Structures are given as C-alpha cells and as structure tokens.
Image 1 (cartoon, rainbow, N blue to C red):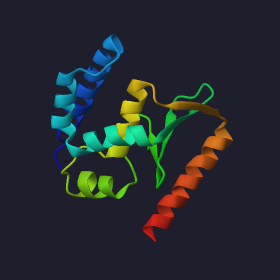
Image 2: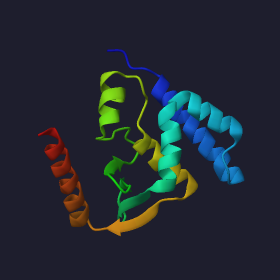
Image 3: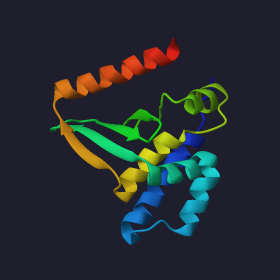
Length: 145
C-alpha cells in the first residue's frame, strides 16, 4: 500500500496556521479556509468541540511524551502527542477503513486546544500515567466486546 502525502501536508498546514496564530493571537481567515479544505467536516466539529469540552494534558515530570484526555459531557478519548490516532468510531471507519478523512474531531480538537492554550496541564507520576493508560485499554477492550 502506497503512503499518501496528503495527511502530512494537512498537518504541515496546521503547523503553519499555528505560527500565524502565535504571531497574531488569532487564526487568519485564509488559514481557516485552508484547514477546512484539508480536513473537511472534522475541522468544523473539532472547533465546535473545543468550546464544549475539557482537554487535559497529562505530562510526566520531566517526561518525553504527553498524553491528552478530551472530555465532553457524553464521552472521553485519549490522544497521544504527535500520533494521529483515536479510538472513536469515526476514526476507525473514516480514517482507517474507508480513508475518507485524514483524522477525527478529537485529534483536531486537541491540536487546536494546544495552539489556542485551551489545555489544562496536569503533571503525573509514572505510576499514575500507567494506571490512566491501563484504564484506557480497558475501555478499548470493553468497546470491542
């Protein structure tokens, strides 16, 4: 299977929009249009979700990787830093199986939350992070039953 360059291009454009946001404190209309054309509906849903959810950044003290939890009134998902993966049905169906989307609203909401500073940081110990990840594995196993 040939690897597509489109997802990489889309995330590069997101990084470019992040640079513009850091310079001006807002997203430029041009950036929003480009991001919407790349990511499609998940981009709009992510922006909407960002207003309705909490995003928590679980960081090991001195750790190399961040783990994010996105929590809404109905659901919660775990997103790993710089990995385009989510255990939601949309990601499985539209990204992995049909390849109609680059990512899901949860991954994009975390990325937008990081850019806009709408992420709450929690420093955790190694054992707390292991417990948290084990909890997520249990959720995944339960959803596959």
